[in-house]
View 1 (cartoon, helix red, strand yellow):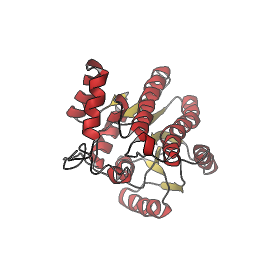
View 2: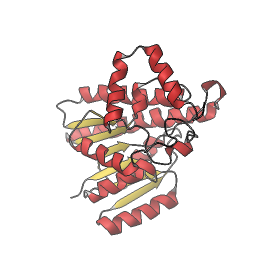
View 3: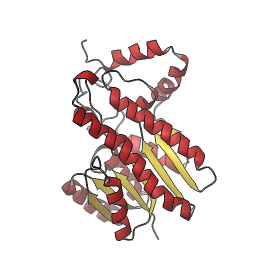
View 4: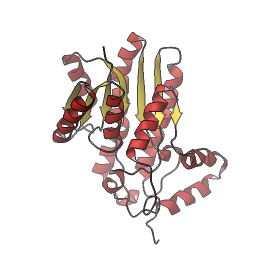
Length: 261
């Protein structure tokens, strides 16, 4: 009997590539995202290409109790989730004082609240079975303060801290937690976050979403707690521990500023 992986934010970017990677490795899938049309097209592609079963659920995960709605639907369909991939999330580029509160609240609800609730709901069953894996997608931003993307960086810091803490709590239970912390990636994230003019991404050769997804899958299978793809990202994440905080803030602000500033 095949095991099922639930992937949030599965209709594009890293989430879509996760769907391909898990299907290629023989996992049935439960895919969640807002766009039903994209999910249906992806499900047909994966089922015909990899002979796996793909269930979908179209839902805005920033809405209150959306994680509970997904959990209850998996129970109704009698689908046991062996692997939970909390990938859904978004960012926004701009000064905190000028940003719309509604968008920042939506970011917090999706990046933090939904991820935490999904973990709470599905972890209980994993512990009962004494098997399961959880992959939380954070970012290299989790290690840094983020001028011009203050709330996004802060949400990813939460994801990293939360993931490391529960990973420790779950030692010896048969359940493992991995936190994936990619740097800037070639995907739709930059345009969605309005940061395509940032020095951090403009004109840069970025890893593809597929490369990041493959690295994340391999790290999950190896039960890595913190997975940072790319040597430069690894160096950045660890070097900030030895760099004065005022200097870290200035460096990140410089990198985040628009090219030409």
